[in-house]
Figure 1 (cartoon, rainbow, N blue to C red):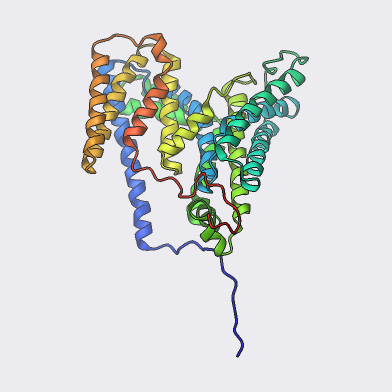
Figure 2: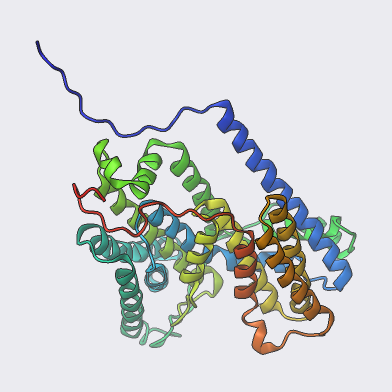
Amino acid sequence: MTTVTTAPTAPTPPAATPATDSSTRDRVVRWAGIIAGGLVVLSILRVVTGANDLDSSGAIAAAFGLAVPIALAGLGGLWSERAGVVNIGLEGMMILGTWSSAFCAYHWGPWVGILGGAVGGLVGGLIHAIATVYFGVDHIVSGVALNIIGLGIAKYLASRFFTHLPGGGPTQSPPLPQPPQLSLPFVGDPLLTLERKRIFLLSDLAGIIRGLTTNVSVLTLITLALFGATWLVMWRTAFGLRLRSVGESPAAAESLGVNVYRYKFLAVLASGGLAGLGGAFLTLVASNLFRDGQTGGRGYIGLAAMIFGNWRPGGLLAGSALFGYTDAIRLRGGQSVHAVLLLVAALLVIVALWQLRRGRVVQAISSLAVAALTGWWYFTSDVVPGELAGTLPYVTTLLVLAFASQRLRMPAADGQVYRKGGGH
């Protein structure tokens, strides 16, 4: 009698069921409700505070631009950590992306500059992948070392290649060509007219739509497409299921025929490429040149947004948008900076009610207490001191995300050093 044995097969994604379709619809409805509620809150606050710049088209456009590099860094972290590799080195990968995008854009144009930024980050991802996946180096140690290496390499290359160029120097590049910007035709002027009428809700909606559809960089649109593609690949394909299985239980994935090393390696490479794109955005779109220290810790902020977003693209995008918005208001200055205090208080009250509805009394009380202190600060002061205004985006984002976060669940094998056949 002959026994036929079959090789283990890799996991395949489950077929769509009415339950999963209903869950997707519920998420869409929930996010639509959050967006609509946010618009109403902004409209009320604009009227109450008189800060018309709170949701102006200029503020929204600036917020969009400031959120993109953080979102790209966080998306890179999501790819890496979903495969079980902690990537503290996002900052170093972004730094490599800023220099390589500037070099390529100066010599060959903005499109090659975008590609060069991704390649620069990819080099950082390659170093991190070799160290952690193949040599079993501790992920945190490798990431911190990469941040130091990336900073040093960028400084050396900048002084080596930019010093003798017109307009360049040892710490900055010459002015660079920018990627194209797109606008939705025939709507910019009518929306601006409606925005200036200061009609409750309608003018606010017009300002937001105009900010999101006027002079939008192609790289911003690419970022939004990458978020959609990440969700589709991670949660709707066999490749994504296998990659996530590697981050949850690499030994189980290996027993089913998944090449654990390959998936971890590819995920870290993708992580580096995305972080490098974030660096390219800073160089080509946000400032039009390379500068030393340009990333400003955005790699770390992206990593924090990814964690508080529960390792999912939607939460990450929301955290990045919140930071970008508060940072844009801070940079534009004026009365709106003070009005953000009332906005933070309102957001924390909403979060407290949501937490209370879910039975999380301690988190709800904590959120209400901080909301009360923030509201008291607003009503007993006229301005935010300049020394504290710079911290506003960081504090606001961390407070709201910390109180709003659900029970965070990182991938089960995240950060664990995996050796083939080792059972870990």
